[in-house]
Length: 402
Image (cartoon, rainbow, N blue to C red; front, side, top):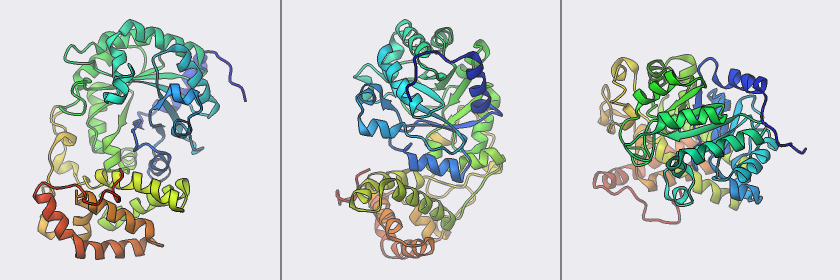
């Protein structure tokens, strides 16, 4: 099927907004490495995420048919709303990539104008596009006019404290963006400091297109409070979803789910299954699993139960995601935590590799839990001692690829 260059009609944009933004959705952010198809399947199929965005794909390589970039934009027909994110700085390249994305049945395209990492920045992509707002407006106008899908633009507040986001947002609306996603930090702040929802709130009040807020969402009530404070049409969650993929279930039900260690192993075992289906269960599939799964465990280990009655009501400027919550949180006693719970919270990379190996090898969830309990009895004390001494890295480079 050949997709012709054209801009989406107002009716098409309105229908997309009705699906993607009502009744105030929680979007899965584009996550480098973490937003692979198995993880997107987990949050959508098991925890009800309705709007997901792919990992960032470099448009230049996507247009050349690069297999890895093509894999990043692959969607599943799960009935949800799927967007593919690209990084580009030229109109023609953006349009050609957008047409490929349209052929792959995405529902919208997201232009990355916020990535702060060097690989993107030094190419003049991501957050570097914020340096020249007029050029960015022309880029957005050109892509929006040439691809028959809604175009969203994900930005940061700026490069540094000069914070030109309000002016940039005005230009993006005039250029034809269908919505703007705003990460409430500058490029220089990366992921430190709290997200500035005051500026996001001002932009919401000034603009006539939907604004999606992004930053500092770890709990369902974080998302609720930031939506209510800023007036955004939706919220986007990144690191919070990596730590607890069930945040979408919580947000939809407006109540916490505090899974036991055994229940969390069930979640991780489900993701292991999706990875085996996607990557294969041969040696190559195992190597790819080893690239991804220990990396995911580096986020999973940060989960703590954070009931609203204890942790709710914190100011927008005092986010839980930026706090050092400790091995045990208020209402818990570290020494009373079951060994399996302690293992799942362990931050040592060798623990993550060993947990991944046990999950890969187990034929059933019950076997996985049994093997992890043995692992905790035999090895946890050594890993905890290493972490206490400041050593969280594995000595076996062959087991850690994430």
